[in-house]
Length: 321
Image 1 (cartoon, rainbow, N blue to C red):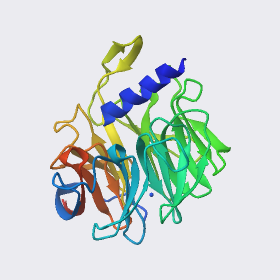
Image 2: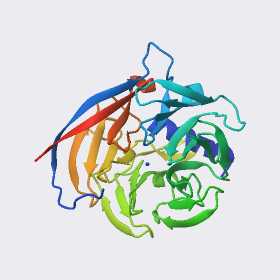
Image 3: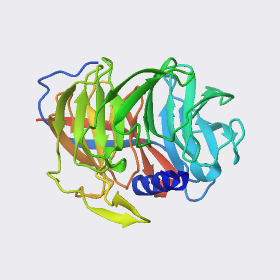
C-alpha cells in the first residue's frame, strides 16, 4: 500500500481516538467516587495546549506530550512545570505530533504520530536516541529499558505484538488476530501485568482479551453486546467509523480499566472495571470526555478536561457490595 494511505490510516485513527496480584474472588464493586487531587493547565494559561500522552514516575513527577506545542513536558508532583523539551521539526528530539508516552525506571519513551520509531529521553528530558522502525508504530508499552511491546500499522505485521529491544530488534512476537484482513480492525490498546500477561482492548470491536506471555489466549469478553461493526468507504478504504474502546489501563491491584468510546452510554466517559479473570466489577463515569486514562504507581487516575487543555488527577474511592 502506498505511503499516503498509511498516513491516512494514522490520521483517521488519531482523530477517532482523539507502566499486587488481583484476588480471584474479589466480587463486584459498588459505586466509585472520584476525588480530584490535582489539575494542571486551564483555558486561562498556556501551560498545556493539548496533551496527548501522560506518564508518571515513582517520585510523582508527571510527564506529558503536548501535541499542539510540539513538546515533552515534566511537572513536579504539585503540578509545577519543571522543564519543556522538543520543538517542531524532524531533528533529534524534535516532534511533528508527539502522541503516545510511556516511561521506565530511567527513561521516557515518546512516539510521534507522523514518524516511525520511538524517541528516548532521560528523566531530565535530554534526548538520548531513537529506536528505529521501518513501519509506523500504532501503540507501545514499555516493559523495561530492554523490552518494549509494540504494534504496527502494517498489513504484513497486522494482528501481532512484537517485543523489541532498544536497538529495535525483535526479541519475540505472537499473533492475536488471525481472521480479519482489515488492518484497522486489528488495532488495539494494550496493558501488561506483572506476570507478562497481555490485555487487549480493541479500538473498533467490542472485544477485550487476555493472553499469556507465550501468546495463548486465556479469555475474550464483550461488554456491549455489539457484534456488527459499521464501516464506511473513505478515499477508497473501507474503514470502521465507530471507536468502541479508547484505551485500557490497570492499577496496582491489577484491576483493568477500559475507557469506552462512541457506543457507551456516556461516550468517551464510561470506564469499565474488570478483574484479571475478565469479570466485570463495576462501571463509573468521568465528568468529561477523555481520549485516554492512565494510572500511576499510587493508583491515581489521570484523565482529560477542557478538550485537552487540562490534565486532571483523581483518587478513586470504591464501595464494595
